[in-house]
Length: 448
Image (cartoon, rainbow, N blue to C red; front, top):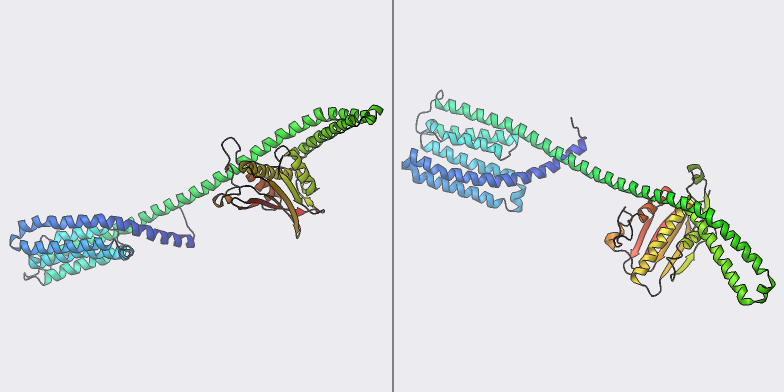
């Protein structure tokens, strides 16, 4: 059995009330037109039973139909929509008044028009009246019938047709009330189930979103594992030849012929710098790919300046021609996973460089700044690129969301970076002015 907390159930009843009003609006329109059609079709009954009163009854039926039609027009107004239940009750009562008058001017308790009263009682079920409204409608219908019979010129027999018809009216009203009660319960139960299904769908969408984030993180971990394997191989295969070259260059630079020839010495210095550059790249790749254990990660302290330098070297080919400025305090010792932060910085630098190339800025620039706020170092990476549209600013950290062309990215970089910073107890957020600049901001804890 499905149970709801009391506040939730109360809110659900309010929503159900609004939904029921819309349902009644729709059904009352259809029921009113059917009612008008049945009232006008009764003209043939008048002609068959009481041809001498045909004109009177015709006028009564036209008047009753016209009033019901006015009720339909009233339902198109805002007041009518808010009071649809009252209007439907009134127009259901109109045929009862007309039929009771016909009973009064014809044969009283013996009049066949009594059947019309019972039809209207059943019609209250279709109009989706409430239980108490249904009971009240049945009582009024009986009261009108009793008045018509009592004041009819024919003598009333309390033990004859009047009693039988009275019992039928009570029986029909009881059946209508019981049916309305259970119909109302069934309608509310169906509405509640639909509401719960809608809530489950929302939860399912959130679950799918979480799964997408997990998938993105798994892809990143696979990439890190591949890079780690590659880095290990590079270190083994590249470091030794580079060291041999550096040793050979150092020996060559001591030769008298080299010291005597300035151009040759400059060539060897350039070669030495190139070999050192290779060493730095391989070393930075190792830092980026390495994933320490949980115990190692909790004790890791590193200089943000070093992480920035490593990141810039790794994206050196992407930031060529871009002016890099920085404002980082000398004391930038922070606590966390250096390799993960290097990965975040690489992603931010790459995105900035791509944005700058996209708009072909005349003076492209990236500014890196950091400042201490209590025990947190707030880091920002700002570029003077095209900025981010306001409608996209809140979505840039969603998994697989990207504004790049197809094949230029999966839209996972910022999502993964957001998760990395969150694991460090911080928040990665974006600020931007469209067409002017974009700034990515995150914070790290001070070293312990």
